[in-house]
Length: 334
Image (cartoon, rainbow, N blue to C red):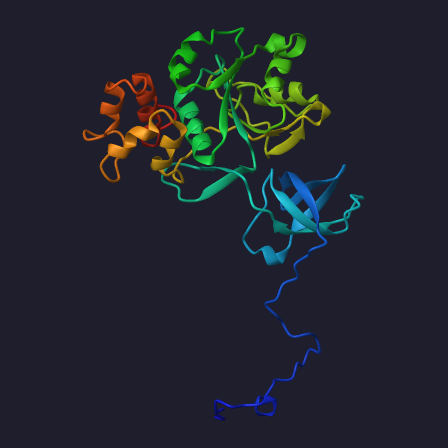
């Protein structure tokens, strides 16, 4: 075996011939400084529909991105054929830094995170007041995911013609969450869509909800577009999944974006660090300074009890915090 000393020159190095005649491989990747910026509208079987300026193009993920994937709401750098013509395909070469990421897992013991949407500002939690019945545990889980992702939650209560919203809102009044109530008749003949749209203007809002709550019907009314809608099974009380993939839709006059997501029957929180939930309660957060290390905020020595007893915060707010912290330990159907 030939050995080289410390002082070698180029003549001492043996280079293997390239039998294929092509260029040697390199780890240096192009920077694609001339790439165009796009906004991911939907993902369908590995093909991404991306909005660039005023046209929609179809693209695929470049190999150099590795396992990093783009999701609805991502801002991406795109190269290749950007004409948007039929049968053309561009390449996504970079996913820009995200301002927020909404995640969920299939269950609380499932470590695999699924990114629902990126760069959203707001999470609209759509819940029917009847047919199907409200599921407070699922609402709580969506709230935890929203607070963890830094999104402002908005409760959208549908089918008020079948039941009153008063009882449900008694349970969420202490959370300080904005909400809007709609009925099926108002969506078609009244001003419900306008009232909801006012809370979405200038924002990117992801819509989540249990199957059959009227989420897609609401989205159709908001954006003047028709996606398929389903019905609720009279025996099981469950809806049928009619939205199979997330889709970003612009509000009229370009005032914001609505992202319609598939209906969910569970919302796992394996990815959520409970210590971050306190950040959604700014009136309680200062009281944690006296807590013991690694305090769960639901134990005997928690300083929040004294903080509330001294009149610094409403006791109902502490109850709401502990209710959310306990959410991971309960199933949605409990």
